[in-house]
Length: 576
Image (cartoon, rainbow, N blue to C red; front, side, top):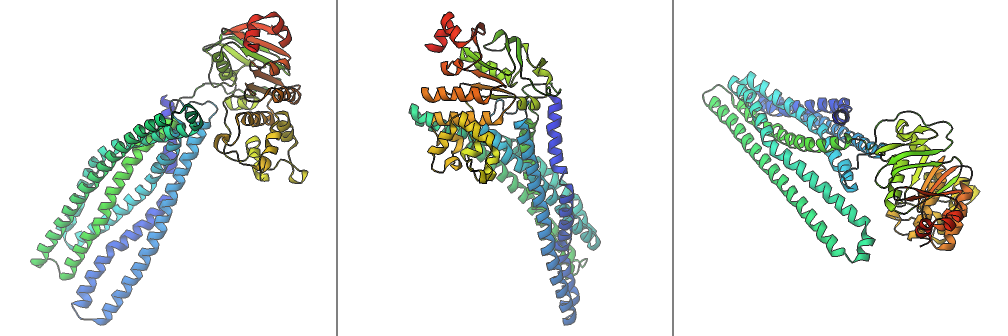
């Protein structure tokens, strides 16, 4: 786990360091800007001493021209510097978002454990944005240091007491600002936790909206979200109060510091140690210092929030994988022989079974938990508590999970469709063809057509207003349950993996369509390993061999017809 935590921190560090050149450029331009800002009150003091006090119109015009050039330089340096800083912040956030998505999609899994999808989305958006903003905060902090340094140097050259006040007082203010930011950091972390949880609950409720309506549980759902949202609001208000206290106290300290500089400068002018122009410059610099010191307050707040978000991002990036080990390549070519020996996990209790290569094998179960556990083992979402699962004689624990996913596709019963067209859900390439699947003029994919026909998803496409180009909505909500199942099966068949494992692909279709799909499945997968985990008689009837899992163990084997005649448990599970 420590190595995972270190890896998470490394990604965070790289997201910030990766923008070092751009932030450095922005910082350099910002320093030029701050130098110009600090020189403005100095130049005004010079104008007063050399032109106004001496009533010299020529010098007045000259120094006003210098001030005009200075303001042009100020404008461009700020614009270019801010642009570089903002781009650095956005690109760092983009890098983090990609890292989070890669971790969530990693074949070894684990990042989603204990987190709702909405929570992960919040981490990948809001938290990544806050961490990326650290680049802008660091650059702004450098600007502020440059402005204070220039002011302190000029004040030292003009008056040692004024310069010493700035040099000694600024570190004290920064230290106090850091202390005041600690409560904000703690409350920002709590705020983000609550906000992420509220997002997760909202996404969860929206995903189950149809079920909630069917159960008449809308009011209970609203109450659940209201409680979650109220807790998020309370955390946000606590963070806002902490930020307002921090900002207010820092501003009060800063105001007192500026007043001290003005007071000392005024006394020095009264006893003749400063000229009128120098006094004006000193007061002007004191007012100018308000900006860099306020910037430091903002930087402290941003860093506090960035640290809180960084901890949440690092937690996701460092999440322990669901399965460990395995870097051997998948056998090439993949014959597709599966073997389970003594597999124990949840439902399965010491299962021994063989799935021959190139055949269609049906697996019926008396306990749904056995089916779910078997699917997790075959897809290596988790490893069995004991025993082994092998592909072509090689244990899955030795194989690279990413390569294994390409060789063995497990199409779960509860898989979801994505928002987009029906065609784009079956094959990503369809999106570039504007979602059409018909017509050689559009370069239609024969493999896609065969998969659609085998799953009878082509009938679904013909029933839609714009054919396969019709949008299916988030999660395929615009389709019926049976239509969704056919599109999901077409997607799995179109992928054409060496080994395909499907789970209850026809529970929501009518008997006639189910029989046609069974024949289509057998035909399109002829010669390749296919496992159908189901209790559907139509699907089991087309299988070359059927295995019954009873009580977590293999209870019987044979063809569907043989088991129906000879095994009462099988008849009860399949025909009841």
